[in-house]
Length: 225
Image 1 (cartoon, helix red, strand yellow):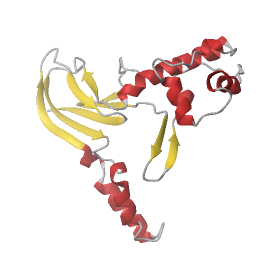
Image 2: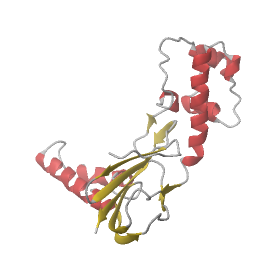
Image 3: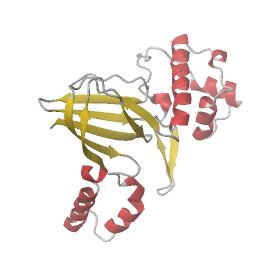
């Protein structure tokens, strides 16, 4: 594996190299707050409040969430989407300094608040990724570009249609599983292939720019020609 650095807190990458190729995997993972699935009518919870952006072990510190509700919501627990919206608003009426919580807890919650504010605009727009290729020797390369996003190699946008297809079969029957296999083959990595071309890299090449949807994954493979 080759170390990859990213200046964006939500963009993560890893690279693998071989004698004649290099493969780069990039994920643009924007943390969610609360999101309702309109088709299946239930709330999916992936709250920043329980995210991995705070690395410290805070298990030794105790705090009372009811104090948070008393101070900022007059003691009445609001619906979670309303609470989250108030917490990540910018500016927010929620000032953690008004609480008697341990300073370590308040610092962690402030960091999560900061991350949440950064994430909100990124959920509705693409992120331009600039890939620096100066680690690759100059020469000719075959470049294959694959993507998993809302429109490529992804069953989620077509889930209503796919549910209808599967409803024609008895759950977990042989025919049902065969149809699942067929669906997986239709939405395999090849269906997300955006490009397959030959390029000539010169010394100190210009960065490659990729526009990534929120919560998408891109794989770019460079193979020596």
